[in-house]
Amino acid sequence: MLFADGERVGSLGMQAFAEQHPWAREVGLALRFDGMGSSGALELVNTAGANTATIDGWLHATPDVRGSSLMREVHALAPGAPRIGALALLAVPVLQFANRGRPFDHAGVSDTPGRLESATLQHTGESMLRLARHFGGQRLAPPGTQTQAARGQVYFTLPLLGTVHYSGDLVWTFTRLTGLLLVGAVCVAMQRSQVRYPALLRAVFLMPCVAVALGMLAWQLWMHVPALHRAWNPDAPQHARQALLYLAGLCGVCSALFIVAQRR
Image 1 (tube, rainbow, N blue to C red):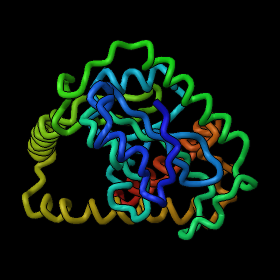
Image 2: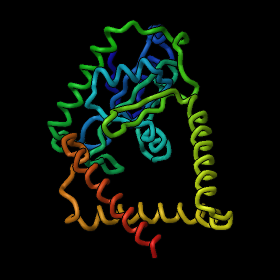
Image 3: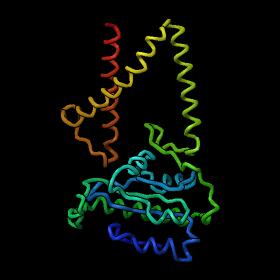
């Protein structure tokens, strides 16, 4: 079933279906598509109740559509960002997609058909069709019977590995494991280098400040010194390699500066 509601008028059709229609109890999955701008590739910007099968289906049907669970947290804090809305009442997995290039003004005056890029429209339409065909051919469990993690799914892209995802219930398990590994590495390093605790405490406070300063430096160089990198379009997948090269070069420069500072 397709709803083409207006977000600014309350998405009344979607809300009426979720609250009143008897077919709402038979829905197994909901897909929502929003436009946050007039260009840009489609991205997965939000999820609700997503399980492993849902994320696997997205990756299988549209491997060219990027997404990260970090965007979900960012959009939760951003004013005017697209929301799941009444689809959350269905108690089924929801995937929300949107394009973010050339964002609209607050009043929506720039949201016009003439401003919309044809490539964005084509990519969105093709992605919608592939997702509908994939999930339409799957046997989806009815509401209330699907296995869902309490904290949803964590998903992100790693270089050379592609998109990685796991249950959100494992976040604290991985955090504790990482903390234990860090403590072990620090203990071994202190024994081998004979570093004293006062010096270690100073480094604990100093290193985050250095990391933040380097991050701000990288951002300012990217924005104000374009001669350092080639023109990069984040909505073009073929330009992702340029971003990795820029990141690798910047990490190399920062590492070299750190080594020089240590020797002095």
